[in-house]
Length: 180
Image 1 (cartoon, rainbow, N blue to C red):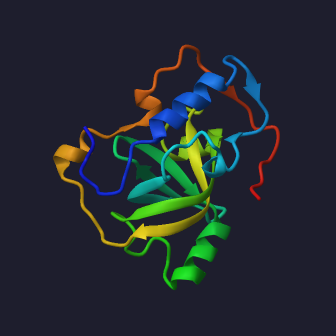
Image 2: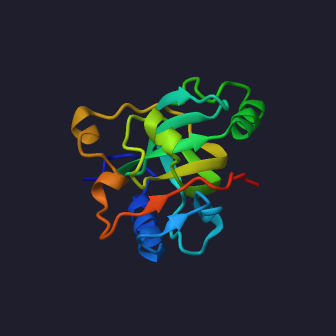
């Protein structure tokens, strides 16, 4: 069920499935970035707009962790400190201030495996392969705050719960990843 937010499409599942099908299963990964700057990719057929469901926490490196959604699925988003700082300079307000319930457009973003530490902070199994979005540049698409009805919200599921993968993937954290 798509919930009725104008101008928002369901694109996360297609991208996620495409990434998982092209990722070798049963391999160890030394770099957590799966697809760097996927927004400029020709694979994406719709405007990458996400609904800010809620902000979860601020991490020790001052990144903001949020739950985001398209019209069908939820995904964890990580907004690095640099991106937060640029947003706050551009819009003159904190990124967490009155942003829940708004639509954002991704300008630059990476799909990446969540690290063991990130998974533990989210209360998840550290061995699970979960892909998140790291948002490196964003803009506000619609400032009007929208509250989802409980009927619409109960149909939203996290991508990693909904998309079935034949084999489990393993991730290691040998290299530190930096976004450009």
